[in-house]
Length: 246
Ligand code: IPE
Ligand code: IPE
Ligand code: MG
Image 1 (cartoon, helix red, strand yellow):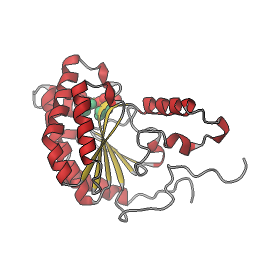
Image 2 (cartoon, rainbow, N blue to C red; image 1 turned 90 degrees about the vertical axis):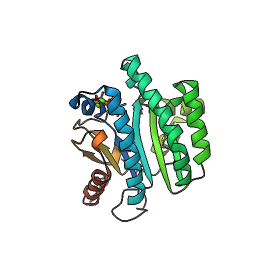
Image 3 (cartoon, rainbow, N blue to C red; image 1 turned 120 degrees about the vertical axis):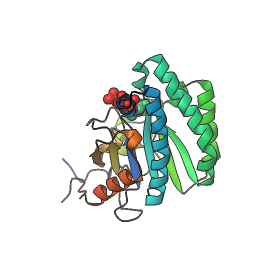
């Protein structure tokens, strides 16, 4: 071992934002299917209720002073689901963007996508691109939606970019990789929440979660609301982050 390690993007040089308030919160929105099953409803009803929870949670996040809210909406592994469910999810995504874009634009919220969303149907890609372009200058908060996102795929794409750029191996450090991830220009992840009682990351933000605080809650995503988000923020405020130091 020689000298001090290079600074990593996982370790913010200084805390910004409001004290005790996470700047960047990510949520694995899980449990829509179980929520529907409990009510003897089709799974799509759970996804619809999940879209309502998304609206509520975004509003609560902006009110709480969270700068970036990143939501896992469709993973690179969700293609394994039946075609009919994938079609329902795409239909809901179309509906959500069409229905919400005016409000996002007026509320000063910037929409960003992480993941290889260009694999979606061309009309969905066009809708998403249009919504991102329309809100690109907004600065009040950022809503990041993970679409066809998988952290391993994201890291593979970053490595491919590094090789394609002909970067010398000895010059590669964590910042070289971080700068080529889909999250390159976003603040470090502070808090990662998963709903529905599952305690795994399911290929979400593996790199970015290096020093994030993790919170697993039993609430099913369609039941998540402002109170649940505020409780998560309060939990975060009580954590001591040490980044390997003392
Ligand atoms: C999360 O809910 C939404 C997506 C993965 C798109 P699920 O559909 O995974 O719900 P459960 O886990 O079956 O309850
Ligand atoms: C993770 O949930 C993906 C999203 C919430 C979009 P899953 O329901 O797909 O995860 P697993 O299959 O239970 O790990
Ligand atoms: Mg699930």
